[in-house]
Length: 89
Image (spheres, rainbow, N blue to C red):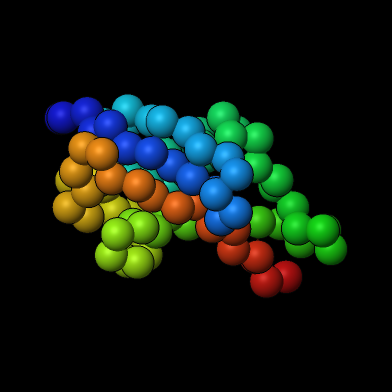
């Protein structure tokens, strides 16, 4: 296990969070912690539950919840954007 230091920013760019993340943890676990730490909403304005997804800013590539930073090729200093995804219901 290696720790990767990344910058997380919300979709607006207004909220930024530096994070040191073990490179072998599934991003699903990382997302849960980031949403809480960044105080991001759990529901949309219409009341639908929100999930979140990470995107590698430099490449524009979406990262899967099952990815780890290691298998996604994310290195120190990377900027990841956190985007809400409305859960259909």
